[in-house]
Length: 428
Image (cartoon, rainbow, N blue to C red; front, side, top):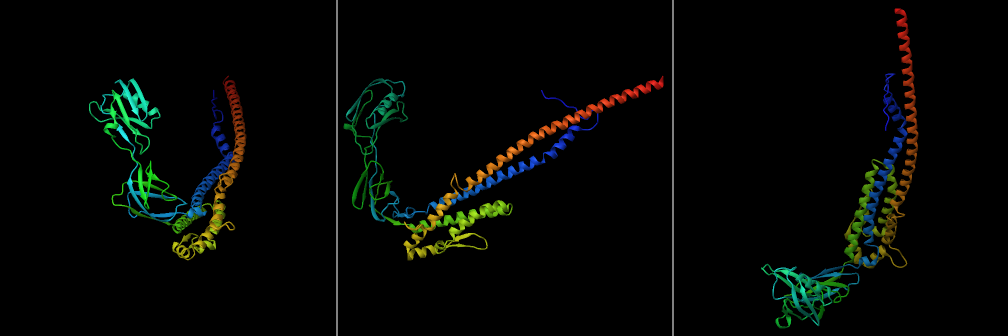
């Protein structure tokens, strides 16, 4: 149970407010430490934003840090909507003729009669699927579908409702496109694909590429053109289409350098925006920005169209310069960016530096966060220690004022007694 304190009853002084004012003054050092904590937390948030921008730069640099990044290709299908081609780093550039003869299709069959429901009507009979026979007795349509699906028959089973009064029917679908499986059902569920054929005939995908026939159980061909995947979408009604696959290294370099320069400018703008309000904090990141700029204004990149505005600090990239140099000597451009076994190109070096900056255990944010967390912990210890002393100080003040009130109350009682005594003596 908390105690109730009545203050100032004897002295007329609001001692509670007086203690509160004194403690507010004496708590000033704690408030200053809490303000430091808030500032450190704000620093940590700023460093986290900075790290996010560095990570964006890191992704851009990773897009151009080895020769595999340059093995990109531009594919022209001559307007074809019948297929699409996806390239890889080992695709062979060239011109190809592609004609889609047929698409992969799985065989489908459906029983002759329909049923009113799937869960109560009992069925008995035999179902021959290829070389296998399923005998069933007093099972529902749903149970029969489960029996087919759980076996190793090369097919799956589902149930449809055609919307009529007895509209529930069993659909049996081959697992693999192009497979032909005879299905004969006798008893309550009848079907005869040997006599009546299939509802949908199965077929393999068939394409003719450079005069060679290719077949597949799926609509994706992976072995027709080296290093590519060809997705078949529709049958070619007007013969073959010409496909052109050309190396696109120049555009890869242009796109990646443009991304890198843009990512750098975002970082530069972020840090300079902080400098106006907190130069000390900004300076801890400016050294990183200067290093980034040092890499990006290397002579190799200056020769490829990267330039710096010495008034604003921002970088720009003129892709036409790279195109001109690349046309004259593409190998020299690749060498300057990526190097070889004996020399690390500028972007290989740059990638190493940025990767270390964003390293989760030893990078810029990790190091700064560790230092800040240590400072915050020390401040917490100091605050806790001060709070304990302040609690004792407040208790002492309250005890002192309580004692003062008690003394004043006692003196007031004595004065009242004496006053009453002398008044009584005088009247007598």
